[in-house]
Length: 278
Image (cartoon, rainbow, N blue to C red; front, side, top):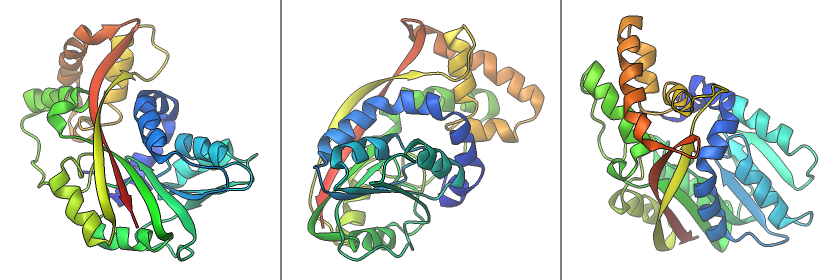
């Protein structure tokens, strides 16, 4: 499980170290999410969980110098990257804060966006009530979330290797903070309606993601390196003794081998793009 405290600490720092690889991997999801947002010149928009700022930068370009985008992230390491990337853009602001309690300007924003940043709150209804208060009446919100784990081999393959070699992982209850915290409509619909949002709809999208980190010439080694640092297997490896880690990595390599395409490991994913209004 990953929650806001993890992102504020080691998890955010590790993501920052692998930022280029993660930006590339998530680019297809970014495209679907920002297409649904359809930011317009002059708009004021919040980018929740902005990470290293790839979405914030695109929104800043779309709202233009007459608009404004606030990238909000709880990770100082990631926010620092976002701020550095956008330092030449007067319409882009980056804030290190917990969105659940941050004192937003009331009813001042046209839209709220998040790419995989909305599933980590311990008290999600309260958090999204706070976020809704920052939107103008009728303002829109667009959230990109992962669908069920079974549709996301990028996560299931490393997780299955961990279960095979290290033993079964702890089972989390539906809706627990983490990447699959909003994996079904039965979870996110009551959260958003409970926070006062309306007009909920969503679309599903199949995506293909290039997975890999580092400069190794072997794409499988790059994919293994990333899975060992980010994702469901990474924390288990941190806690495992070295002799068990040595057993996990060859199995993971074998599982990744069939997915090499064009010099990269390419894995499927399924996302949902959620739309609501304030």
